[in-house]
Image (cartoon, rainbow, N blue to C red):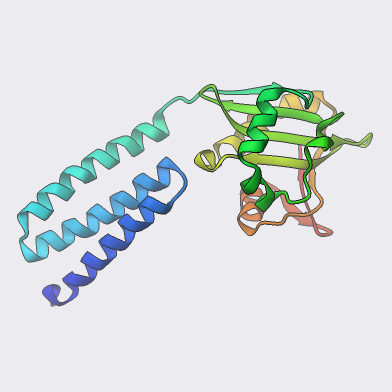
Length: 206
């Protein structure tokens, strides 16, 4: 019976390893790599293929080590305000222009002037850019809140909306408002970070 289903573990392992090469974040790469090695370990045990079992057992330990290290590593986050004309932020926007357009197709860099603008550094690398138009009532209408693919693991969302809550309040922000969300994965991200759908808008109260 086990030998009959064993080939499926081989196919499943290959599928997991292919997915690992396609995902965006280091964490997801390690998770799918672990799933692939576990499937190969089961395959190796059933067929007593010791080289496959030994190799994937070692890979399982390596991937598990780096996954744990990834989650336990005390990353450094920092929020830095900008006005809108800085060269570094302009280069960031230009470099990620195509991907930004998939999430914020209506955004134009000219909109930055006069807004609440900041970037989030993650271990001294620009990982996120945020710009919102503030209203007298305390609504921060988001023009862009873009995170580079490598850093889409919800840590930046928690940093902005939870750890930097005092900063947002000091700027007079009472609610973060998205008038429209164009990307389904982005909508799911917002839901995970406490946003609710109200009158076709995604809103989070600070």
